[in-house]
Image 1 (cartoon, one colour):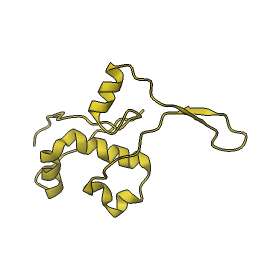
Image 2: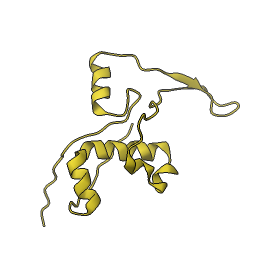
Image 3: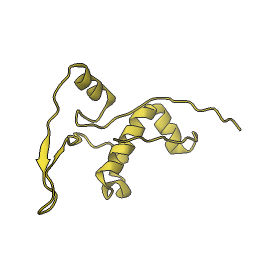
Image 4: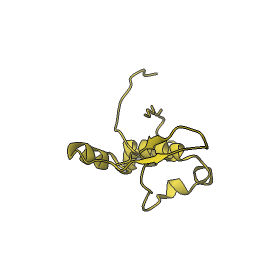
Length: 107
């Protein structure tokens, strides 16, 4: 059994968009991202939020019943993981031909 760890890619969902390329472009061009101020309940402090934009075309894997009913953070994590894998490795993992683990980081 191998104990090697291989990082094969990375993915991102951010206020800049649903891909690493969009995040990289926003950072490189120093694009100010939209911010909203919200108060979650009466008497609570106002807080600033930067929200991820709506996903344009919904990929087939996001149409699974469990993902449709999941929290946005879960959908963001799944999309970033699929982007990190790429289409070939995602197809292998989906078929069971590739065993893998995913490390997820959020902030």
